[in-house]
Image (cartoon, rainbow, N blue to C red; front, top):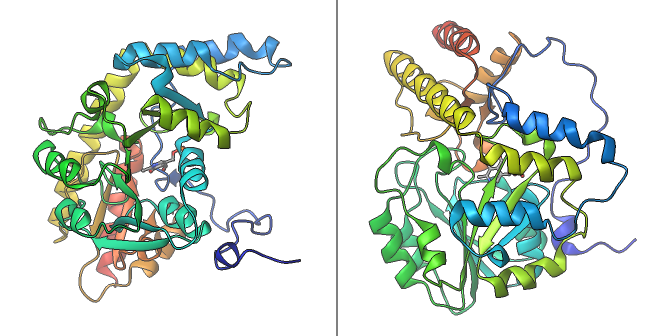
Length: 360
Ligand SMILES: Cc1ncc(COP(=O)(O)O)c(C=O)c1O
């Protein structure tokens, strides 16, 4: 069967059903999930919708989009919901990229940008990070007349680092109007800096070449339910919606998403829990002689000490049932990423890491 060259070059995402791991996972600190679980209000709303799940969901997601629009003081036609923000990255690539188009992104950012733009045969210009955050000046300078899209992850996954408002403003004014700027804010609810860029006011002020991506998978604790959304100019979202499967937001996610928005108690508790975990990791990793990247998220990335093999550390941690990541495949060899768990999981992880590093 004929394959498309750009697709054939990608690694298959389907593996054989795997045998259960030799050591069961006791602390899953590898997927940046919320250790506090879902918002109780979201759980109640989803449970109440179970008896009607023989019905298709509203293809327009009217109630959810209205709630999100109110929340962000935008118009409902500036919201497009999808089956996770990962799906939106796919849809954006499908909608906008042709083989040979240039895309600019960081070297050491969310892997989906690489996979999805690569799938479309786009030419990727990867700009090295600066202290874990995007080098926005270098990214703007990398834009050429062939550039169709710039992808920015703020806070950045996998480093957790952020860019501030002043450098973002300079970047936005430097990028031509016909280049789509995708700003992925999956972790924004955890961000702490007071000058975090306000992309909502950019959108309210009519910026027409930007899509902001958000997700319910992180602080809202609904990763398994699959719900994300794009905020942007109505014309962009209308165009994007042509790529979208009609019923891609499931009925339970649609109601849980509305309820979760109003659960400020869960949001605050999750933020506080992550902040406490972050302090613990910074203190303990620093005491081990390591220098983590500045993090404003629910995970932390840290280069291993000189001479230590990062994948060997991940394997040794897995042998103790602790799942963490090494970031060679993300463009950051020698760096570990640890998602915050419960306090017990975090101390288990840090104790194990200290012991393993002592034997390296
Ligand atoms: C930066 C970033 N964007 C998007 C996603 C995808 O989120 P979702 O679960 O909504 O597809 C993730 C998930 O890890 C992420 O880290």
